[in-house]
Length: 152
Image (cartoon, rainbow, N blue to C red; front, side, top):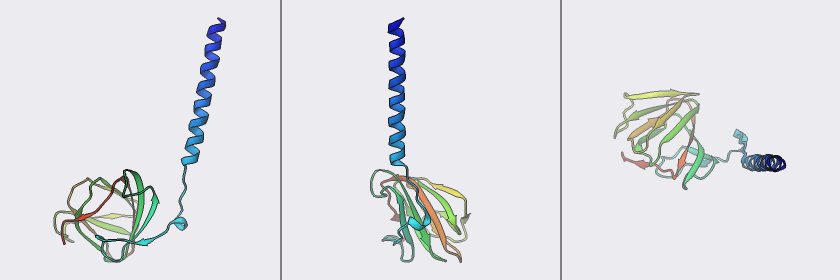
């Protein structure tokens, strides 16, 4: 009976220690980012001039999860392109129109508005454009990330 009691106490101690370590690790990895914390930079090629990007977490160029925000000016166009991984996007401000195919076609696109989410699977040819207001999106997916233009 003493052996059984000792084993139960030991298991309870191990569980308690493991939970404390797990909670400590989780706290150390927690992160809070507000709009005022973001550092915006001009988007690089192949994006066209005018877009701005801010990294929220992670690194889009390496393996692993990342989150970025992208601001587009009014009437911005992203020609047909693909990504090497799924594009998981939430519209934070404004609206963006998304269409599928090898050529940007403003008549055959669906407009995704503020608060909405969209997913474009890896390798799917698609394009995007904004209307008369600034638009901000948040992409949260796994890297490495990239954008390869189909339409030039």
